[in-house]
Length: 593
Image (cartoon, rainbow, N blue to C red; front, side, top):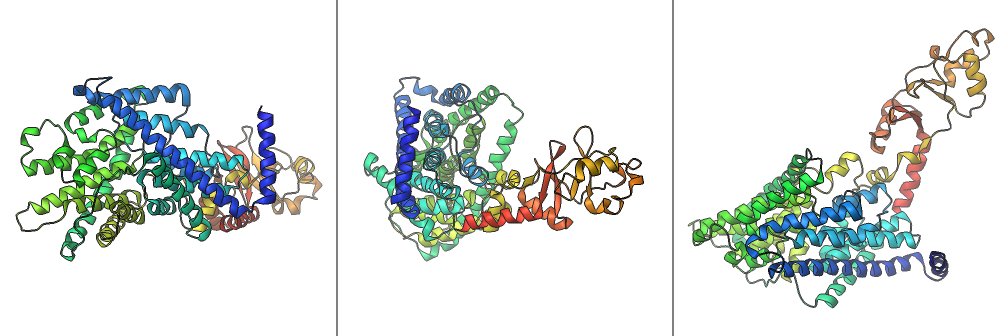
């Protein structure tokens, strides 16, 4: 059977090469990828809603004890990861970015179904994370494996992965323009017709899939009533500053809690501690349960009582300042609940929790302004929306995505000016304090982050193994000069010789120039050893530690033409400047075509 499938694939590929141009094929694939990513998103949403509907009816557990459900969900995810997936799951968007920079866009097939199963179990049982990241990850895995099946090159495969993300986002939010911009901002694509048209086709395909299966059902039910007024400009500037501070808090809380869980080596202990912590937070702050779209919609409708739900503080809810305090508590604890869910082994994304936190912060600021007794009045729903945009711009460093997402949600551009004010201030403020986002910090530290800088991207994509040469004759310190000449120099085409000890550790190097004047002095052949001629290399490249950026820097600082590579403490080979520059030029040509 596999032989027949392979034969059909080969025939299809031959037909495609003869009858369809590469550009046309990319357009066709972008539509197909957008459709499949949209289907993955719809599946993810429906499966999650199905779990939530069962639990909300009290079939499995009494509603009075709903706050212990996240522990059950995390346990089911733990069992799935341990016995089915059998690998540690990485952050969805970060793993995609890593695959683009270091794996030529290759993503394991099991990421397709793992995200579709593990994320609904996490969110459906009350885990305080989002579904967008898993939807993008599933769509990206589908795109990557389709690209491999059709023998698509790495650059086109990366473009199609971005198309999958656009299709997934467009399907979830029904916001095709924001979906395209997200792919450009987060995946660092060049904004050219070669990339925009496939992204557009994928985004349209994704949103049409959503309309076909979900009808006109939207996540945010909102109609803009009050447009922007110039007198509110100062308040939107303050909101931008507030969301910038909140973005820094959100990011630092994420890394802080992740680090706090690191001493708990066993996943069982992480699950137990995290599950109990989430349960306690849900008991006191019920809106932290699940994704939080209901909470956002209630705030947009002006119904803060429904947004807060039943809490231990219900008898004080008539006091507006208690309401403000509770909403501010959600602003503070949403980041804590989200990160705890992820650290405990849950599967989900950070995009939608960012929206929830931003909506709460925007609503809090509007309520404070309206109840300050100074005679000011602003639209609470507008501040709720623009607070969401401010958090997205700050946390994800995606200001354009935030602006167009909220603009599409509201069905118009009446709030475009305050959106630009708040998003730009939030982005610039956060960027000044923290250069990288939750998605990108670890990748930047590894030298694996793609940016809009072509030179940077080429260096990130290049692999050390592609430029390491190992056809060098190795010598030892105690080897006689005559032995070195007969066994190494005469049989080598290189003019440099690594000197290693009995444990294969590099102790020095010898250049042909170092021994040239002694090569014909026969009296030295049996009296002089290699150690007399060897010297330290100008610099050493560490395989596990140094990125291509660092390698380039070492060549520039040392002025050397060849530098040795050490792997696991032992000599591994050399990198030559000529081969490095040749590989760089070749990769640059591939990248800019």
